[in-house]
Image (tube, rainbow over all chains, first blue to last red; front, side, top):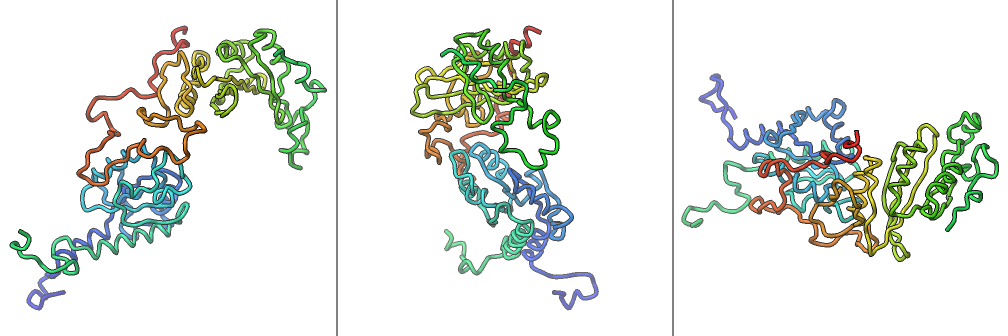
Amino acid sequence: MVSPDARNEGFLTTRVDAVLNWARSNSLMPMPMGLACCAIEMMAFAGPKYDAARFGSEAMRFSPRQADLMIVAGWVSYKMAHAIRRVWDQMADPKWCISMGACASTGGMHRCYGVVQGCDNFLPVDVYIPGCPPRPEALLHALMDIQEKIRNEYSVTQDYAQGPVLTPEQIG
Amino acid sequence: MPVDVEHTSSPQEGAPFRKALDFFFTAADEASPGEKNPLTQPTTHLPEIIRALAEQFGEAILGVEEYAGEQTVLVEAQRIAEVCRFLKDEQGFRYLADAGGADRFADEERFEVFYNLVSFEKKKRIRLKIRVDEAALTAPTVTGVYRAANWNEREVYDMLGIRFEGHPDMRRMFMPEDFEYYPQRKEFPQLGIPGSLPLPPRTPEGPLQRDPFPTAHEGPTPKSYEEPPSQIAREA
């Protein structure tokens, strides 16, 4: 809100969390972990028809250090799981993860010895998308869910919904 | 078992071999029958080549079986490289299209390795098979004849556990090097053995058990496509 004293002087007062969440949620840079046919739908999601640029996510970053949203698209083998985890560990906080499709979420039709039965066995997944493969709209919806989650996060101020403010003595 | 060449040959020599392939034909194919339609050519019917093999190798050719118009030659395992060399040099089968294995669980000689060869000049395809006993679990390699067999034989070793003697790089193809089982064997459970394949830790603090990028720590690992020089390269 514009403070009365600062009116006409070009100042705006707000909360730090609100600015951070606004900036983060509208400039998510996905790390496309495309492992199988879901990656084709992920390309359509980034392309001009479905146009993830409307949500500020058009810049796919193939370096984990420049990305903050990992989209695991496709089935994950046990060998690949270690590489995915290494990439995830290199992404800077704060970071989010979408498990795209039946295979990434549960192993899907690859119910066999070589495929991890869900990438949440080694990654903290925020949003799961069903489908084989999901439509690009479904991935857009997952992106909007991630944005909604970011907008309700507290990174600077205390989240009072999580309980009362503790004094330093109480924390010990 | 002596080879009955006459029995396996077509009743009418030179006629389009249509007997078992009618299933694949549609009405559109009938518009160009005979020699103009490549689908009607007897590409997998090889009486002359099987006769030549029988003359050259005699007892090493254990038998010929025919299914769906395709002739398969069962070869004695120890002489497969010689047979491949003969087919490549004398009969023009320059291309190894595929090689793989099968588990004939509970049969006498349990494992089977097949080789699909193609001759571009003759427009023919032939399939060779060898049988491998469970007690021996070894077969001679054909990488000296076809370098393309390298990864196929590695795959057979990975999935069934058959070691190929003389192979330049007998490592696993798909599964991790320290995996202890052979997943395409019939007794292997479909969902695997719990704990046989490690996962990354669930927490960021946990150590990574398996380094996917060892170049950062131990120097480059040998790549699978960096093979030692083969017999072919040395001869050239």
